[in-house]
Image (cartoon, rainbow over all chains, first blue to last red; front, side):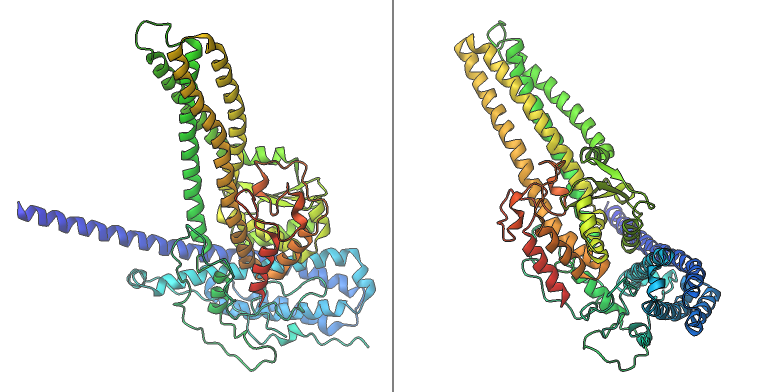
Length: 193
Length: 408
């Protein structure tokens, strides 16, 4: 009788532990999938931006063709960014290339301030709204991705899910960070004289 | 210049990225009054265990503070909420509250059904008419009434859950907006849906010159935001983003589910109470001529009926209002979590407070709590309006003050 009770208790405890392990494992998987989904969203927005840029450059060319340096800078930055495989594993590299592109675009828009005709162009205004929105989307997608990574990372490092993560080999995810070397974006050097 | 490392809106349309306080990452001052919200789960610190990420930093000019490791950004964002709750806690709470609400409403319907059944049994068969116990027709009536109440309220709950949002939108005369009609509004909502990690809600416009907006739906997959023409026209892009972020936060928190159920229930209770009072009055009137004991039983039933008829809508309203006041603060905090830019929403609220014609014609007592500011209150221009148990919204001045506390 006594051994039966002990056995029942042992089995019960085992089942409870098993359930906890399953729960922790599933929540880790869910968090990982969240980061992947969030990354996919960044990717969508990056593509949207790549598609908008040639259009934008063409429009600006019509009004400010002599600003070749800036225009080429944008094209170059875009082509560089396109080449980097975009998956969560290359987040760091991709972020760097995208930052270059963001800076180049910033210069382009700062430049547009000096051309009233360009600013009055309807096409340019629509493109600017689209690009503004895309930049916002990109920023928000990045913010959302980083939030999911933070939640995932927290689960990877806190007890008891860190044990499960170690046993089942859950890998760390990289943040999509903007490097602080973006002073060019903050203060575009444009001469209005 | 502040570092815009975490600023999702590096490109703003005009005069944009110049706010020096845009991105200060120092922990905000605790928000007055926001620390103690009853019924909140125990605060939990999320992100505090994050290691500080190493990064190649070089000395930068500008104000101190934005020593922006990502953890700091994440922590700050979480602190936009009172205490250290996250939106995940709010979702759990709202789902639970919605289930409890539905259960309570069904229970109430059963009680009301029982009462009506008992009361109308007097009308159908006066207690002294039969030779056996005078209670049995009453018991029978109570049973039938209770069962009817259960079935009707159950069906009503299913309907409210699935079709409530559409009913509310129709009632508010909201019309869907296309990208062609208003690309900026559609863009803003799409952007924020990305920030919140939810599907893009349907976007509606209400043809009213008052400034207001609301969100509804049963879950983020079936959600809608609606904004009045007046508000749409008077806001800048940043302010509009703040307002939409507030609505998206309602969606993300599942506030929409609770408030939708509330709106439908309040409407149904109003209708039911009306019908119910008529029936009991009628029943009482008819049996007035019968014997004394019968009259005694009747008076008891009628008293219960009257008390229910008066209390039910009253309690519903108080719950409705109390719940939604908290939710407004939390949605403001959620909006800041999404945009990281409290100023946008604060400026929008200031404009809303100054609205000279704040009455939304299609809003009623049932739907008032869903709006970003009270659509019924003529006195809204007084920013220090008192917030009693019957006001559906916290004073705008208080909301602005809390947002400003986040700006530092």
